[in-house]
Length: 257
Ligand code: ATP
Image (cartoon, rainbow, N blue to C red; front, top):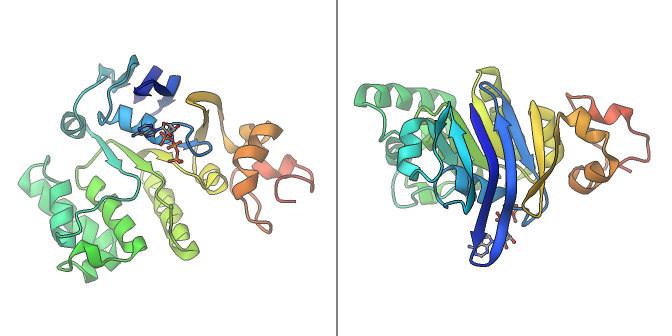
């Protein structure tokens, strides 16, 4: 569905991306992990048209979308849940969702609004409340709901669990799991690498603007240096890596200590 080839992007003289390539298949959930400043946000920004690449190309469903505007991308079926949510604080929950659906026909928008009310009960309860009054977890659900309102075929999320309390982090990963079961295609940037690997089909590791590894959680776990650097340090001491079984091959002296 998505092919990114040799993407380079710069902020002035700083190359934040250096020839990064990745692909996302239809129905796949793909994680993008890596340390702070690795270029993860820049990669999503470049795919979604918020930044223009210096080199490289982005193909979506066989069409070259390199450098297309965010609006055009949204109409093509690519939506982004941005880092820090960026909901419209002065607008109500419903208005935020309606804006998300601005590219779909009115009848479909009404149908999607009903779907969001069912999917996010906490938002239904605050339908007419200004979004600025929402808690972090509610705001994150609204940001995801707003993106889903465009009926995207590819949904990208930038650090959806960032700054949330543990229970709400669980909620975000449950939601990613549900979207996966529903056959959605997702590309998700996450600092919480262990949780992401557990729910993703595959992941890419980005470091200093370059893709340095990719594979399933189990495959990445075989690369001890990468695993310890990008997964181990964020894994709580009493928690293993679920689902993929990636941690099972590791000794007790692995990243969990
Ligand atoms: P984080 O996890 O901290 O969000 P990231 O992997 O998403 O990091 P980016 O935000 O894409 O990384 O940043 C990649 C590099 O580009 C970093 O060196 C960062 O300092 C730099 N950078 C990001 N935004 C800008 C900007 N607006 N102007 C100049 N440099 C920037």
